Image (tube, rainbow, N blue to C red; front, side, top):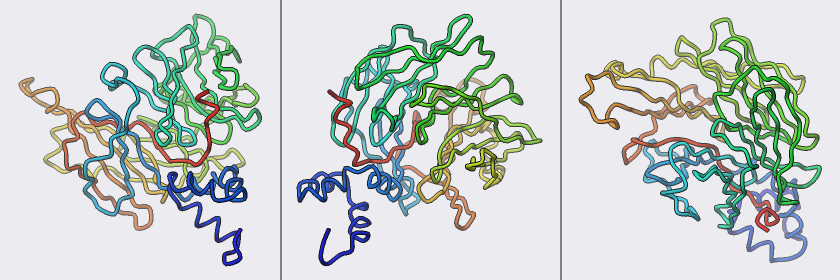
Amino acid sequence: MSEYLSEELALEILARLTIKDLARFRCVCKTWRDVINSRGFTERHRDVSPVKFVSFYDKGFYLLDMEDKHPVLETPRKLDFPLDHQSMIDESTCVLHCDGTLCVTLNNHTFLVWNPSSKRFKIVPNPGIYRDSNIIGFGYDPVSNDYKIVTFIDQVDSSTAHVFEFTTGSWRESVRIPCPDWYYRERIGTFLDQSLYWIAYRSNVDRFILCFNLSTNEYQKLSLPVYNQGVTCSWIGVTSQKLCITEYGPCEEIWISVMEKTGSWNKIASLSMSNLISIQDHICDYQVEFVSFTKRNDIVVTFIGYHHDNGEMEAEERVKKKVFLYKTGDNTFQQIRFCNSLAGFRFLNEYVESPVITDHIFI
């Protein structure tokens, strides 16, 4: 690539550039364009780029950088939502992410597929039957080289996967699950490699992971870690390109496990939350609302507390939120403070800008 730099070093430098810079450097020469457009390069760029978080606040979407060195976050960067956001999104909106592109559920039961970097977007209709409880997923199928939206439509005796393919611009029915006897607490599916994952519940002790393969359109059930103490809430995510389960137990503990290639679970952390809530805050019933990882494998934990009062307080005053960053390197917690109030603030999903060209999505 250069007579002065080795190819390996040049790639490492390119991988640390912004999306705007990479768009310019694609025009330098055919070699650079082919390198930047390659899947291997985009994966390297993803691995070294910081994770930011899409959040709903003040009737709009904001990006938060939780890896900032300062414990106080200034006003987060507001994203330029391409539609009339006041009528199209609210607190119930779901946001999914893949390769720098977001898939947003809208109040008119359609989907907005939107790349905040390129500012391109597309409205995708629903598959004809829509319920706010349907699970949804968004990911990339490397076999067909296509991005896909998946939703499971529940009926009386079955649950049927409907898949939207951007290459055809249409929905099609896929696998049918007969007589499902479980439910989901979280609609949003987690994407890893070429599959989507949701946690399904029959009860607090009878749970499993529903996995849907975007390439084969097949589903399977995967086991979850088993804890003797029982589990109050669970989240599924990705850390270091491994499937990750975060469990919140009844004793104010968080257990974090990753799935190894063998399919077994390996517990990597156990955190006590009891010392994070001060004595004066015990007038609120605090629960864990959101858990996720940064690129440094630090853990973001959001607590939401409901105030014990006699009903005279305003609705916003009854709800308190606290955000902590657990630094795995030195096993310490840092409370993240915001310059503005956290009232109405909600973490939605992780977001990593990507050099992947997804133009065919918006055709």
